[in-house]
Image (cartoon, rainbow, N blue to C red; front, side, top):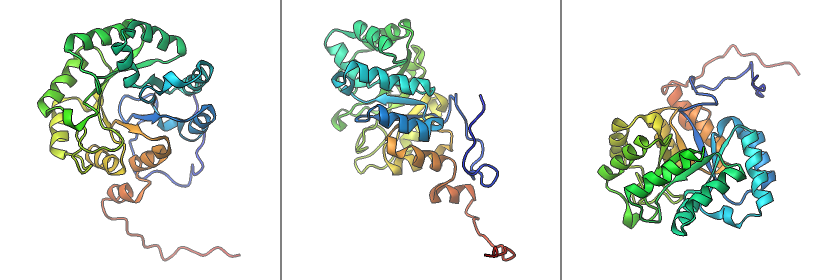
Length: 279
């Protein structure tokens, strides 16, 4: 398929080279969507389809949406080669209500092609989690898992986080998401001030293949940290729709932050011979 031309083709190129293109396994971006209707998703696709790999219709909000509207939203995304899943909390509600197999069947029927298995708000033993993953895989759905808790008081110790990552990968999930909520304070690898705990990130990244991890980075500071630490092809998640282009610009050196990195601090310009066009 021929790539549509970009506005500055032949004139300007992104300072950062080597950015992966879709379909890709590294450098993926998943976007967390809540109160966006079909027309909003059409706008998202028109502006940013090249840079969005998966959309999560977040938490349990899809339970509130009319079926026809939800089907339309999913169809818009799938037609643009964007994977789509209901939020992990939706699956947790299904599990709590004893409706998990029926939840998976309905998800596939509605057009979702990915399921997120998480236990951010419920307590799930290893055997139950394994069963959830296997049921989703048997249903023909791609499975990603999420490791971490949504309450800072329940935050996992680092060794337990790494154990759970390896556990889920061994059970067939395609990628593991490292939990971080929108506030990014005291959750996952973010401290109580919202700063990334670099030592923990380095420990996880040395023990797990970076391509299999997705770092949730809902804040600008988090996005900058992960792109600077791992480069343009780090997997990022929990990105707001309004931030997609900003994040991709960060990846490709099109913002002051990463243009400086791409130029190795040498972005000095001296071209006195430039002429001034005649009026």
